[in-house]
Length: 479
Image (cartoon, rainbow, N blue to C red; front, top):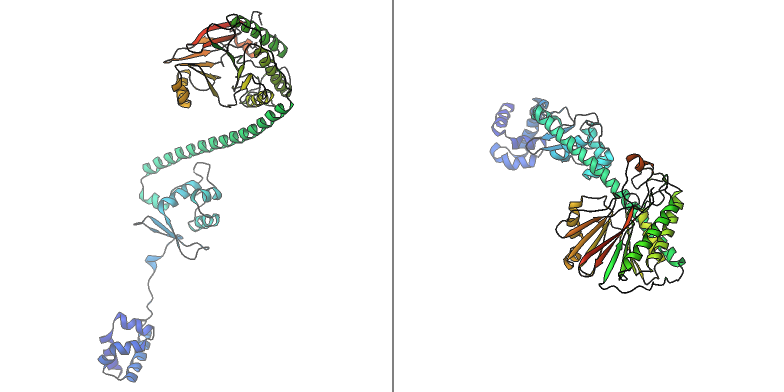
């Protein structure tokens, strides 16, 4: 019987038969092979029992598969055709598939090849993965900060020169990213400082507005001018609080008021201006913080404490505007400079609050480095002069206020910063005036030998013809 069954088993051998025998699916086998076997159902079942035992004895049913070619010495599988890494993580129910580009970027960023590896938290944010996933992934891939920045596959498939070039490009990118981060942190810091400054300025303006007395400054009885004009004056680069061998705040205030009276009287002799356009600031204050330093932190020689210098400057500016408004209504600008960029905002707010009820004083509230107004056919621009190149200023103005540019025929830029008076080259129909300073020299300027003329210049601006005259009032005493 066994001989016949052996012949029958060889005759019927197939993958379908072997699979069904393993699973003991005898009913299925009867349906497929019962008629061919020539047996009844009971006899066929006995045949199946025998065949299963025979195959098990011969180790044909449970063959041992040689897995030598399918084992890995790494904790992942790399599919070269799809550039895909497959790895099993303890926290995941299913294997995780990672695109090759993603893994190579993560490995490069995590490597300490440039002395500044990204942390797990930074990688989690950058690639949008959970921190636990990133940690398990590096552990499964056998990657640490000290690992090579390249994957094993890259090392096997890429020549040495290409790897070097890739590393140089990666280093360049890393440097640029660091620079961008540094710039972003600086912008964040500046933005936060500006928000605090803006809030403080608002409060200062409100306080001065509440405490300012209701008073009037009478206009002087001046003859009318034959041609309507406005007068532009700017005691720029005043450096209030500077200490020099022959210069302090008392001398500075006396000089400003005496020079301004003489200049205003001389100009008004041809008739009263329709308004006086005053630009304060532009290094009006010598310092910008409690460290008695400029905005960027350069220490300065001062003749008092930062609190006293700032408060006395606000009071001095208030009295100065009261002097000027005797001659005509005042349009007031406060321009930020490189010595007082933040303080200018507070000075502007204080003056806006103080003159909030004055009908003849208009304080322009813009905190911009470049401030504008239109008088008749002229576009007037005030800027300190420490930002950008002179030849680029006309294009900047045209881009920032294109409507005002288009409405006017004449364009004038008034600047300072270098403490010297000069009419700079004309660019198209834009005239740039560099205005002098009234400030005396401190020890640094004396050592450098700076001896520019100290003066205040008034510019007569015709309603129709632009700047038609300049009047300079110099400081006569030697300082």
